[in-house]
Length: 171
Length: 223
Ligand code: HEM
Ligand code: FES
Image (cartoon, rainbow over all chains, first blue to last red; front, top):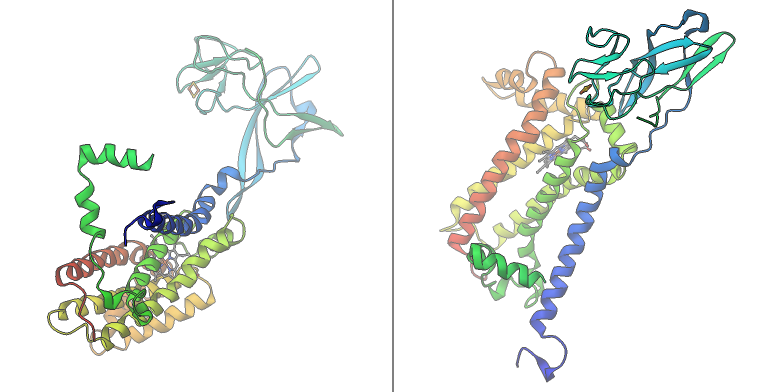
């Protein structure tokens, strides 16, 4: 009996190779697919962050920035905690601006008006990043975007912030 | 395409002998179920290995979410099972596989026993097999505590007390296993370490020896 019977189609050896490898691949996929999907789940999960937090009375804020800290409930897998967040808030010319202090370069914490090199700027000590008094990044310093902004809402004289700050366009 | 890739690599790295040494050898007729269906009993060793691979893989993935801490262990298992995609499946594989691997190992042992495969010159591989059996029981015992639920806690309490009833050294074994006087935080930490580092290490080493001996000595003859 020759390997190739009647000279047509594939050889018996090739057929066996394909079916065995196919079955093996099917089994391996059946085992590995759930495991891999399990592992990458955090990257595919939707995060919900609707809602607002109260950070004080509107009258507490003036034209100069004030750093307020507030607690937000966060769910970190099986662990839930009240995480502390903060915002730089000012109320100037009837417009309230609430900025996230997280540097848009690599995530350090910016400070208002602490660098003698540029007064009235936000300063990030990690790599000398600067943002002007409106939170717009100063070109030529590491950050490539303005500080994120919290949505604000005034209700009965109280100031409420959205839970997650949003990126702003420009500069 | 695969053939071309293989040839390209083989020309440079000479990988042929590597896999031939592992996979390319005659299967004697009396162990081939295609010749005598009853020869399927010779598959149990391979099935034990297959499930062990699943245990190791699923266990590695479980540790991406599991934490060995008495305050959080139960919550982390609950979370990975109910809220992570395919969590039920991955935990299910590890949970049921843990029992199945012992069943397979037992059937494999029965086949070795009833075909007399443990006789000269293969006595040492019987001994290695017995060591593998105890390591596997150890994995089952230490793994069972990890979910830190009622069943886990009391089963371990009982197991540790049994170990403690050994004459003379019993109390020392019990304290060693518990990592202190109470069954608690330190017990969970060390059971986790034993379950995912120490015993799998020993298991892999023993399996290596088991397979090398089989290659050296070949499969025992027909009845
Ligand atoms: C090879 C043989 C193994 C056996 C027989 C085994 C056995 C077990 C058992 C019986 C449980 C309790 C499962 C439950 O109650 O649902 C368990 C849990 C666990 N095992 Fe293993 N295991 C093995 C290998 C491994 C390896 C290699 C790892 C990690 C590298 C691992 C990681 C875990 C983890 C994280 C848990 C806790 C999660 C849970 O309970 O579902 N296991 N194991
Ligand atoms: S992180 Fe702020 S400048 Fe680099």
